[in-house]
Length: 297
Ligand code: GLU
Image 1 (cartoon, helix red, strand yellow):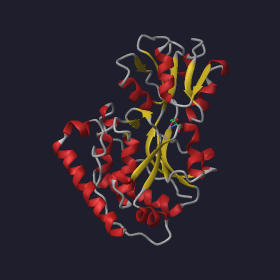
Image 2 (cartoon, helix red, strand yellow):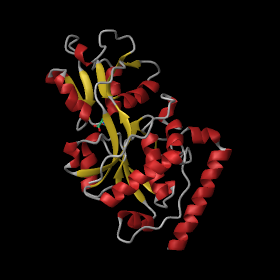
Image 3 (cartoon, protein in one colour):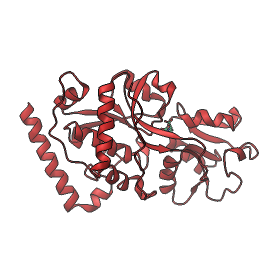
Image 4 (cartoon, protein in one colour):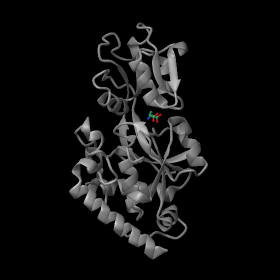
């Protein structure tokens, strides 16, 4: 079994090289080879999550399926984006190739549930680290810090920040179970807040004129704007900090520390920068600095 696992890794590595070299167009579409890091020959202390995942040769990842640049389901059925690349970096350090990853769509509201119920091994899904969530899950990272912002129709000149929403009597769309949905309550009457399960539905509602603004993290909005054919624009006045963490089983300190080390190594070996450049770098070319890691608990 071990042998067939190694053989499979070799075959996948060869396939990735072919994709990267012979098929640039496909790689640009975000195929699994877009910036896949090399798979490590890894050994781990028996009984750890790392050892179990390495032995299984498989990693179950919860991510978004409708967020361009971070997690967007591609033509081959697999999601692509920065979160997906972060998951691949973690998998590679565990000795798991990109095709050993299975993806589960995890809308904002169910992220704690899928971790607590062991339906996935990690959630990499524009997932803000906060104390309320830490009651049910632990977080490695952060690997990026976003900020909540607003997206409006390109011709909208009245909404210029959260403080302008009330005067404009604006209907604002966000997603259930997200931090922006909670934060926006300070700025908008409850009757004017529209919540869906995923942000693409907010984008549809904005396009149809059913809402006047969409609020979530600036980088998520930039992805929606990038695929809006110039229908939407970013207000550009971020009003929170959203540190993105990798959600794992509560209390798995060794796995959290492994992921944090993996992130530091990914900066040093260039895979973090490559992951950014191949995805979110399309709209924000400057590679972000890896934020200082939080304490694993
Ligand atoms: N980062 C925020 C959160 O974790 C908003 C993005 C999202 O809903 O995925 O709630």
